[in-house]
Image (cartoon, rainbow, N blue to C red; front, side, top):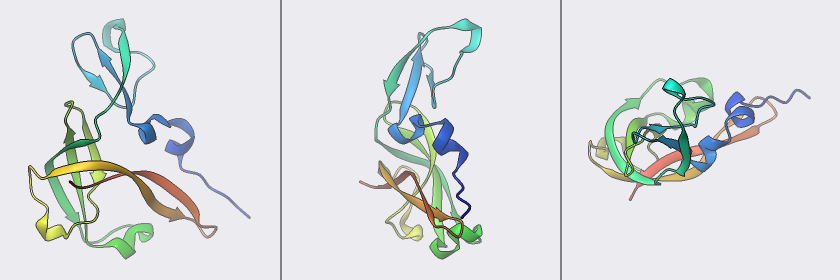
Length: 128
């Protein structure tokens, strides 16, 4: 039995908890980095779980593991604290998605990977 695991699951657990870092000038880094430009210091923060759609597209031809979801919207979301993330917009008719739409971040099943059905979780956004 061959079990695979996504790289982000092993290496970047901060993505699941929406952990980021904010430097002295107010720039937000998500996920947090090991070092920052100019050797600056940054303090850990937790990102807001609410925001708005800045731009989006609707995926009609998807990779095999997402083909059962088509068509589905994916967008760039600006969180209330100013950070931007890319996420699938779930639980909404793609025709009703619009720029400026208020959304909230939820921890969800992303896909089942491989023949073994390894479950991969992450965040998606849903309408408020």
